[in-house]
Length: 311
Ligand code: CP
Ligand code: NVA
Image 1 (tube, rainbow, N blue to C red):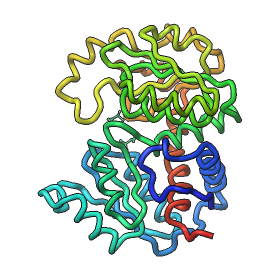
Image 2 (image 1 turned 120 degrees about the vertical axis):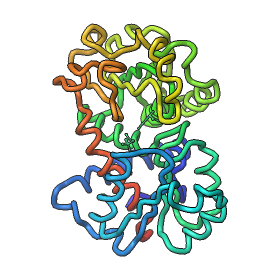
Image 3 (image 1 turned 120 degrees about the horizontal axis):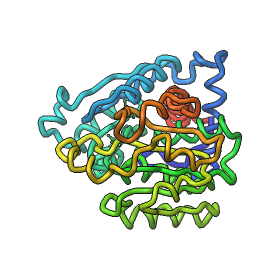
Image 4 (image 1 turned 90 degrees about the vertical axis):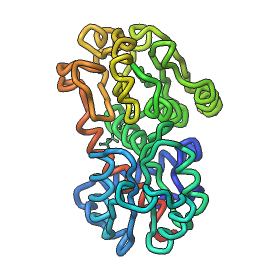
């Protein structure tokens, strides 16, 4: 298993470039059909705390744990005492006595950090308002499978500067891939996120840009990525956001400006005819379902690295 210095995965910023590349190599190994059921986590139990909805994250972690010989437990905050005010610190200490790892999907990044602080078992960020590192591991695996390299590749992220674009900027910076975010000025990446990504990029030479012009971002790019305009928790802003993001749809006109062999990516779920047209989502350049499947393989590698017997 890859040697990971960190005990948790709170954000990919804490992982070195070589740790990320090692995780991707292990993911590729575990993806081989003959390795599907390697019992690397025999008898280990992962608890999964969800404060937001999920299809891919829940099912891929649960299936992945089973395939590795372990078990995963779905813990909705609607059911557990945390949802009724039991502290994160107490929850962390109690769960650490039963489990070998905890995955959490929640709103504030600080909640994940608090959980990790008080937990004696690995904590995995399964999405917060700020980051979605597990998705980006799967995305990097997909890009690597498709192009065989990150060197010289350019990603254009079109739309809302959110948890996905934050994590993609960090991921791209770590592997040395250029990334341009095209978004309305009102929804641009926070200055601290730009600083973080740029501070990582100086080590790999990746270029990180923000523009309000989607055509400029897409010009000659290899990867076009988009995500919903209103994330979980922003439902009340959905209509207002739809107005602001009107010019930021990934559609047949926009993709004309990309490299002819570009791939289209989306973490899913997608809102068809909003951030992307059905034609592009289902078109020949789309890799969204390969990308979704790769959640399973990338997370199995992560689980083995964090929860496996260190040797
Ligand atoms: N991409 C992703 O995290 O999907 P879910 O919300 O379905 O888990
Ligand atoms: N930005 C989206 C990603 C969903 C996987 C959200 O946070 O709702």
